[in-house]
Amino acid sequence: MINLEVWKSLQQSFTPKGVTLIAVSKTKPASDIQDLYNAGQRDFGENYVQELVEKQAILPSDINWHFIGHLQSNKVKYIAPFVHLIHAVDNAKLLNEINKQALKNNRIIDVLLQYYIADEETKFGMDKAEIKELVSNKVALTNVRICGLMGMATNTDDLNKVRSEFARLHAFLLELKANYFANNPEFNKCSMGMSGDYELAIAEGSNMVRIGSLLFGNRVYPA
Image 1 (cartoon, rainbow, N blue to C red):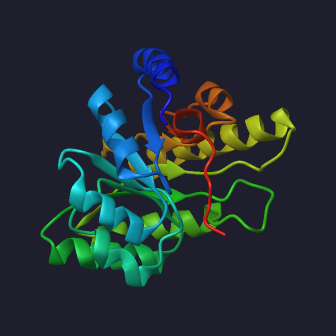
Image 2: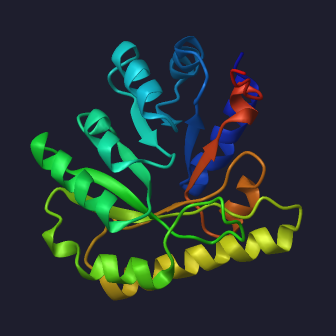
Image 3: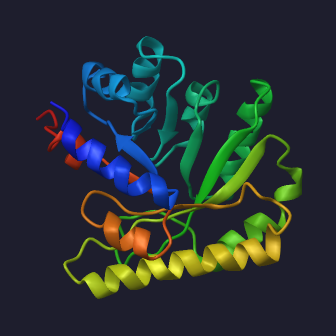
């Protein structure tokens, strides 16, 4: 069951700040998404390709679907016809495949580059050098639009560490904007912050947060 009061409170807080709320609906039934859609939510985030494809087919066509999980190159083709924004582009091979599939679908697909800021080996992402090399060669990507950065902070109770990681991501975003995307107004998205740390993320420059459990409750994964 969704928590509409929390959703209303977050929307009232985020809207004046220009922050986009992405409702992370992975593992949740389409009926929950429909209920939140009926309340006015349009941006939803999914982590699994098959689940996203199944939900997209039965839910309203004007939903903005965000793919926020680790994406394998061989699965891009399934979401290329409709995905609104791919958040976690973590290597050049994946970016080239997105461009290839976007061309096949006669689309421009918006993407974010995942910057590795966490002190955890289990998280994905690129370092500064890898991202700079990638954006230096972006001219050939005719059907991909790089719109900013995404990152995930370390899962820790040390709030100063989390804050510093978010600050580092935002600072790098500004550096890239100045040096590579000065003439690209669409390069302005800073996707960081989830249910447990979104306030810190917004304070450090996030304008796109991914909220799941606060809206939908804790997830129950199949055994």
